Length: 333
Image (cartoon, rainbow, N blue to C red; front, side, top):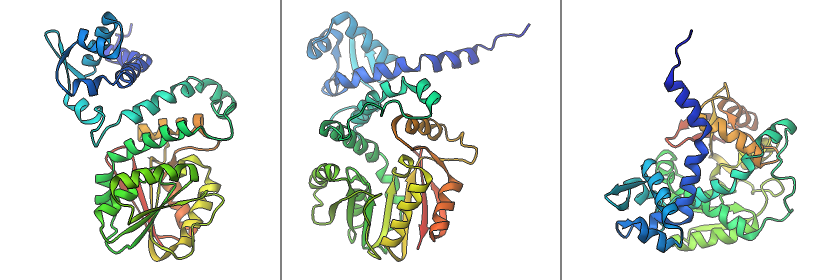
């Protein structure tokens, strides 16, 4: 008779109830408990009054947040943990609350995983209207700004733009990377290319960063519109190619090739799988997220990205691993 390995049992159970932890985090962010506690420690009674919720239920939520190391508890008082103060308090430069809200928004889509696997098609997109709701667009773009904000420092260190005067950020969304790269390279002018309804929001982020004189927007569709001819020293394609199938990705990369000056560099920033398609874990899970939420998207492997670049004409192709679940793949024209 085999002896039960309790650590293995615990691992299976943790996978099964993992969404409990997510829901606790979602509730903490939705009630904005972390911003409330950034002003000082409070009791559960104080907090329940502030968020207009039941005292007993609020205390249970707070205790669960303590168990997740997002809050601390001394006697009857609760306070933020260091990690919550840095990432979950509104106004923090590294605030991630909007991205947590985005994860909450797509949770319902994940509940349709079985049907999506059975059909091979995104069930969540079946009944969506053709035009995106402006509120949903703002919600998504703000979430992308959150996610990008914690990556910009490393990205700026890894991308060499010392000899580049012009940068195009394709489907750049909030323009977070373009702004950060422009700040890190004072000689650089950047253009954020995205859909018209997105660029209206991008301009708000650029204005807030005080870079209206060096970071610009251009409205367009990367599948339908040209990006220019021999125009840019560098092009950034960040978290875009996972939305499309290989044929459309090659189409986008060819447009980038045409838009680059000779000697210019193309920088792909993506969640890159290894050749087995099972690692890193986030990229493997994200591939399912693309199956659920897009018409043709997926995570792709390093050999796939490199072959697309090579077949498009790029040389000196290299991969640079980053710390937070993603990688750069760079090629030169």
